[in-house]
Amino acid sequence: MEITTTMVRFLFPKCDMVKRTDKAQLLRCKGEQGKAKVWLPLSKIEVKDDALDADLSEITMAKWLFLKTELPMFVKYDEFIVKSEITQQQLTESSSNNKFNN
Image (cartoon, rainbow, N blue to C red; front, side):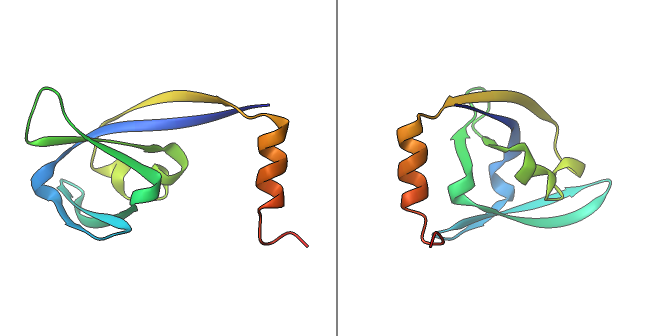
């Protein structure tokens, strides 16, 4: 079985990545639209240094999560598709490990 996820990638100033806990990263956004603070769960994002500018980080996350935040009003982003192959065995193991199953 194939799972397709739309991801977004954007650059963000490191100086505006103001606080990080064990579970989340706080981003401080500002622009013509005003100001906002956005918490992102670390388990749902990937943060890397930008290859061209040491003052920026590249953040990658699922589009559904991105759209639930105020980030689309403040950043320019690229979309890309990730396809993952899930075997029947992985699916079975996942459902048997689900604590909500009776």
